[in-house]
Image (cartoon, rainbow, N blue to C red; front, side, top):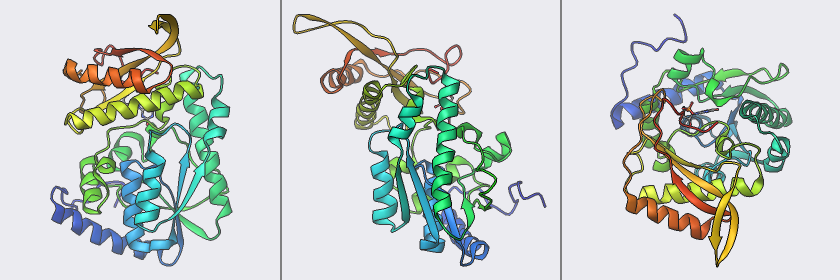
Length: 326
Ligand code: XMP
């Protein structure tokens, strides 16, 4: 049997009971596969890797080592949440790597979007490989591969812009959710007790906020992206739009415009609010967000985000625009 074809015996997971049955089966399957050996997992905090982490913690506990790489391009509060949920609450063996300076130094002055993506992907592999080499006796690499990854890109999470590990790091793969669709992974995550904002997360690109800090990334402009994104997410949640709008975020381009503050001219950045609805990201529409909400977000950005004097709402559909800006 082709091991990359979803087994016919796997029922569509659309109830908590079916999710629980899947969890029970996978715990047994993981234990049978892994035995007493060690497993390594790159835990980004995204839905797929989080569900795999939670399954493996249940199945093999401390035989699993999770590595969470903070590349400085994560959203506000994400590294803290990964540590809280997996280390503090689930007792995972979690290595937190603060690689912020390393990534931002490599990215300094780099304008070209594809070069930025390549640097982020390569650096990620390097950091993860360095951590893997420090550990002894690891036989397995767990991965949050899901069925669309297999169908669309031959089992590689190509959209994560991450290549393979170097030759000297040869692990057997443990991919417990590889036959699941995204909605099934979410259902399993919910059943495993993961927090809603982790399970129902909107899509988030591998290069993170790096592609939303348009052009050459600077630390202060990156903070403007991170802070404005946090405000947008908070206000969308309060307005009941979380889970209703497919993807929403802010972008800060690398040019300034004139403003006025306390009677003096300013030369500051603009924050662009991007919100889209989509089924599979190949096309996107723009939701009608109430002006009242947009005004509230504008006021908070003006008051709370440094270096910003203008807030825009992007009404572009895909096509002709893409969802992200680069
Ligand atoms: P675009 O901008 O192409 O985005 O309309 C479509 C979807 O893909 C996400 N996206 C990425 N995801 N690495 C990723 O993992 C990337 O480099 C990347 N670029 C775009 C984007 O957020 C949207 O959901």
